[in-house]
Structures are given as C-alpha cells and as structure tokens.
Length: 264
Image 1 (tube, rainbow, N blue to C red):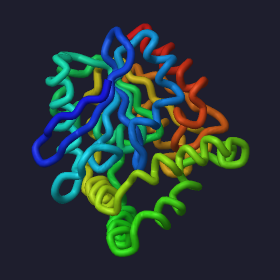
Image 2 (cartoon, rainbow, N blue to C red):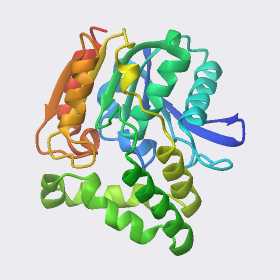
Image 3 (tube, rainbow, N blue to C red):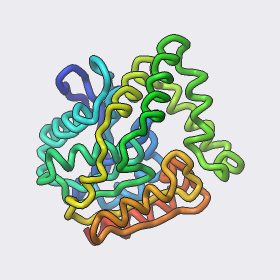
Image 4 (tube, rainbow, N blue to C red):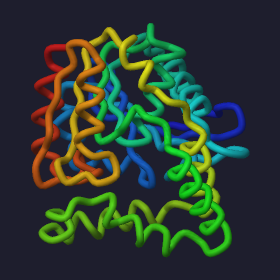
C-alpha cells in the first residue's frame, strides 16, 4: 500500500505490507525499500511492515542541503504519526542504523525494540569524512554511474558476487534509481553524523545486532563493539554475506529476525 507524506522540505514515500505489530524497516545507502523484497513476505506474515524510501533514495525527495540524521529521524516520526503508531520495532541497515541512533536519542518512547544490522556507532574519522565529501563532489560533477559501480564490491560480499548474479543485477537496478543530488546529499549527511558510541549504554530495549561476516565497510568488529556496549543485546554473524546481508542471505536474516522479534 504505497503512501506519501510531506516532511519539512521533502516528500517521503513509504510502503505498507502485512498486518500485525508494526515493524519499521530502514534500508541501506544507496538503495530503496525494494532492498527488503527478498525477506518481506516472511516478516509480513506476522508483522505490519512500514517500508520507507529514506530521503534521497528511491521515490523520496532529497530536500535541501545535506540529509542529516536529524532530518531522517524527523521523517521517521512523521511516518509513525501519519500511521497512528505509538511504538514500533525498528530494523536499520547501515545508514538505517545511524538514523535509529538519532531516533533513539530524540524519541526513545516510540521504540519497542531495535535490530542494528551491518552498521556502526562510531562517527566517521576525519579521513572518512573527507572521502565522503570528495565522493559527493565527484558525483555532482560526473554523475552517479561510476560511483555506484565502484561501490558494488564494497556492498555485496564476495560469495554473493561470485555465486548470485541475480542479486548482483537487482542491486544494480536499485542503485540505478539514485540521482546525483540524492547520492551527494546522503553522503554529506552521513559525513556530518555524530558519534553514537556514548548512546549505546542508554539503550534499554531489546536489541539484536547482526552482521555479514564478509562485510568490509562495517566489519564484524563494529558489531561486536555495539554488542559489548548495549546491555543484554543479542548478536549474530551471518556467513557468506557482506554489507547488504539481509538482501544477500534473506532466509538466514528472516530466521534471525523472526526469532528475535517474536519474543520482543
């Protein structure tokens, strides 16, 4: 059930699938809500899935200036209010996790449980920030195609790239919907995000931390740091998967997520 809302300076798209307790699924950069297609049927059999295209991605507009985590969190709150959802479970991959840290700081009363997948709590290093900002400038100047092609080996694990040409082509299709403005706004927003490590000790709802063992962008060590700092959190490392783990290994991800959500 496709929906649109206005959130400050951008129109935000989201889809709704299934019925039951609300579960908000935040996709990674640079994709869109189709990221969840391989796993959505398994989750929608028990949960009401809220599937936004994050601002800058898919059918959602970028708005003006960098897409900061504060803007993303405000978009999320607008969606919850539009759907009359007081509390929900949330899952976020990569940038989705960055957004959930900000959302927790601002609106923790709306959070029932968290799944943090292939993400990290640390802010970018100065070198990492400069790399993102340089990439943003290059995409604005040259267009998105070469940037996306260079990102694919970092986003999909080696096993997926070798054995799953269908996943590779679908990832390219999703990323191909990104515009130069969308990519550059998202990159500038991620470069500006705060350090969320101090936030970890404040999280007192059920948390599942999951990571693909072949993730080179946010390695398993980043997931282990979050697991250590969030009291009582659960941890799962999934073999033969990279940064896009739920997209690459949907059967394994669905089993882990359902096992956690069904008791949360």
